[in-house]
Length: 101
Image 1 (cartoon, rainbow, N blue to C red):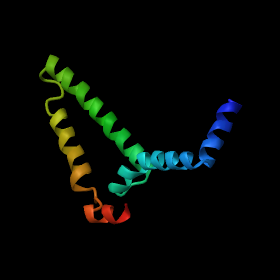
Image 2 (image 1 turned 90 degrees about the horizontal axis):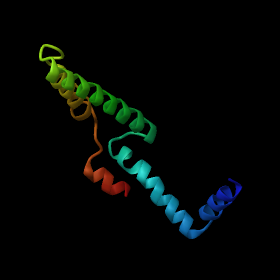
Image 3 (image 1 turned 120 degrees about the vertical axis):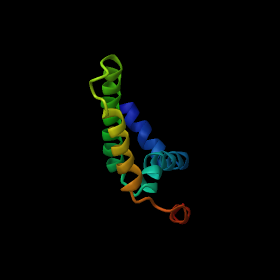
Image 4 (image 1 turned 45 degrees about the horizontal axis):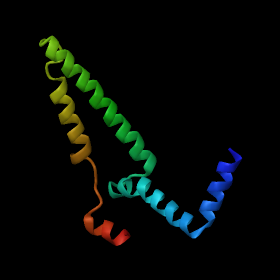
């Protein structure tokens, strides 16, 4: 464990380490910033979307077995998620993204 911490400190202090940390930082911040969110906001929002889709998928499977159950759950969920993601999200324009990079 101590060796790992020393390795991390050495990597962070070197030029290669700084470049690697910059790339790693971009991996976690570039896309969330493009949709005007922080990393944590994006993490929680994407997790909520994913869980919602899983639950709707289970409802669709049950609907396939028992057609009277969950008749509109799948389409209602798709409409709701579309509304949240596309209609209500204010995206940063491509011009603004190019200026930041």
